[in-house]
Image (cartoon, rainbow, N blue to C red; front, side, top):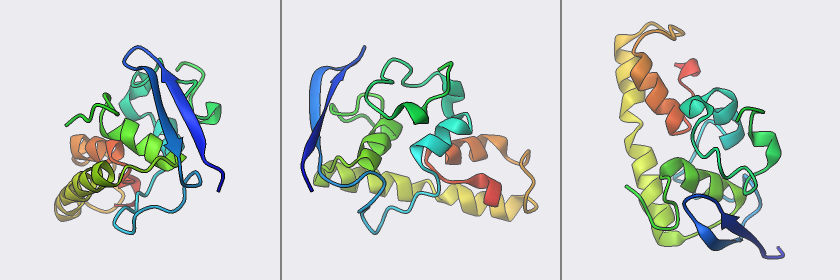
Amino acid sequence: MVRRFKIVNDKMQRGYHYALSAPMGRNFDPELCPELTPKEMLALGVFCGKYMSDCHKEFPARWWRKKGWIHPDDPRGWFQWYCRYYMGRRMPEEDARQIKRWKAIRRHVAQIKQHCEPGEPMCRPRQRQALLHWAYDSRKI
């Protein structure tokens, strides 16, 4: 694969750049199995369309609607890391840390299954929203 680079100039990062060393949406760590892509999360209204609204140029335009524990490389947190990971950036130590965090949020799936009827979207809405923030699809629970 030809190594490509992304250059970021937004409100939180100026001149930050990173290499894309994996194909977009592929070659994930076997421990990371998100149910939603960043594009799907945005289409479902994650963060009410307000999160990362100044960095549309970094990610594919088709991800964005028309309206639009922090690592220094990802000052906006897990979702920004996930978008960049999905795009192909790999940072082994940080990737392992974020994947561990992603796996830990799964406990909310078990709680929804224990307390809600299948397909009942208004049962435990805060936990369902949290799952959406972490690329879990609570509509399937």
